[in-house]
Image: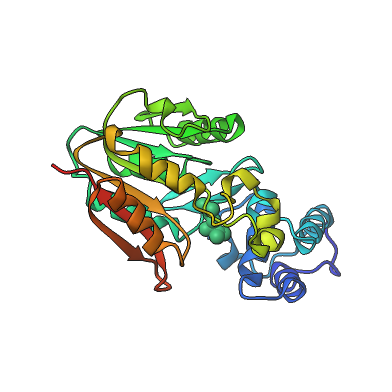
Length: 285
Ligand code: GLN
């Protein structure tokens, strides 16, 4: 039951955004309220003056309190949009980030449509990269790996939800290429952990709640990228591409690693904020 004194959607959101503060406050408040009322985003435009019932106010207040205590919005709602897909996430998976869509774009430029291809996504997490590529290239066969069984289960569930039958899943290990078992791919993509283990950001904001194994990788953040760069060549078809996401200050180091590993046409691409974000190279044709 709701009463005249109950707040409407507009006021509830304004108050929550004020409490949250910051650039994302309004957007975050909307995502939390939409989760409570179980409606799509479009609902907000026509229901701003709807009165919110007490049970929903209470559910919203408890989510807001958890957000104020630091929990990421995507873990509170259990999902996050990436590319054209809504992906389920939980604390076993990294939360998909918009900058990773650059890697998807660069991969698609190198994957001709309408022909059978093999693609691998190493450390798939929620499945973001693998599923985006599988959805855009229905004829491609995508192999998604992760060393976390929890993450792999989530990625599998996301593939099922979006009815993407062209993705296979394989549990990984500290050997990034073990699940590839002597196979070669037209393209290998990865958003591996690449944050320096001493980076204070790991102890601030949303990163505190994400799986450390998906974020940090040795003193300079490059331990996993060194392994991937060193092991990729035998798993690439002639002319096949390796694409790696990384931090804004790691481009030069990773170009050197890929060149040292014998890859060609090595270069770094920048994200929308003009920061180095993806380095790529290919096996000689
Ligand atoms: N882009 C993430 C961040 O800096 C890190 C993701 C990763 O390590 N792969 O928050």
